[in-house]
Image (tube, rainbow, N blue to C red):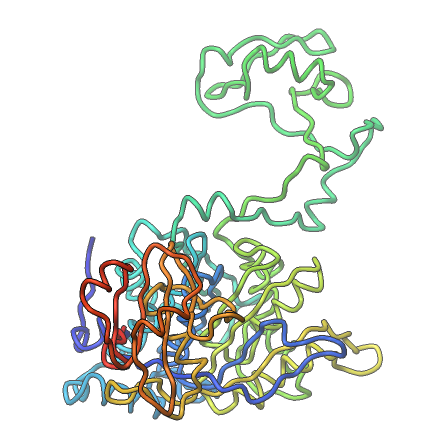
Length: 523
């Protein structure tokens, strides 16, 4: 497989391992009357830190990831700075890449920024999940090589083409009409098995009718031929008019003679209004599972850039963000890649279109999809969260009023790191420390706390995990502590400050000991 190299790659290829775990501090919850946040989150902060903070609870649980990262066009006029020269990114590059970063091209900078973020997104993706990434011509080639390295070349599902304009731009020598969405799946075969058909459009539904009052309902006539030559599909058909026909040159009938007889007995074969037309077979609307997704997404079906602008201005009362994606575009992704209870993550949240689409979908089908948005810019509350509030509550006036979707979310800021110079941060709540420790050992979210055993973190694969920690005193693993253990397991991993058990006792009771805090794994 071709590999992509750039200045600074060696500094960022494992940088996601060095990113400290931080807490997420809830600032407020917003919800419609009688509802709670529904597990929905909007996080303000650097998405690299936020993605790492999400791992203890969400690693391997996110069904659908959509991101709309900077396209690296060099345009500095947008609210969302699109040339990877935002001061926060420049500071990060200076710290991580170092003096070498002074020689980076804008493409090098973009790749340095994207690599560790994609590595963490890959960890969050579920086994049957998929990631969709919006991009344009500037970085499409680099992004595909980057994703093939991180997600696996064989895990590339499709590159979708979105028609973002509905008319040419006369100011351009050749008008730019499209963007791309790269799609990679954790397991392409599992994704294919579980992906959903698209609902038929109104125009497609109108192609069905019932001129003969068939009790099976509306139908349309499908071609009865197929390309190629198959000897057992080259038989003669006698039409109701008496005329005998064979397949056209270069084609054969779509089924064998036995299949044709079955269609005939089921009254599915039709031959035009006068019984002398080409053989066709009825396809009933009631039997249509939907439409197979394809890679061409035109603006009539999924919206265009101006639609996104109009939607957001209508919600906020004025233009607050340039070129937001239309809601229908994100809804198309979720129609393909989510179930009614899926978790959807957008770590370049922008104006919050992804949350809007999730709320719309839940209202349409009664689902319980959850969204997690991350936005590093200062407008995370004033634009991103504010839009979601208005979508939940309803917006507009008079004939332009749009009813609310209902639902809720909680708004978070990034908090302090869990560890400082390898030591537990005393300012971090014990609950967060316990979640982190359990995750480092099991790669699983911590279960609900035990009512009977204060220090039990949980049981995973028949192994019990204990965190014998007291903020104000040293703890000792001894026989007295063992007598407090009520959980039956094949083995026990116990964190404490001091171990007073002998090697024989440790072996007898299948106990492993880790000292607080030096032996807590850094990921």
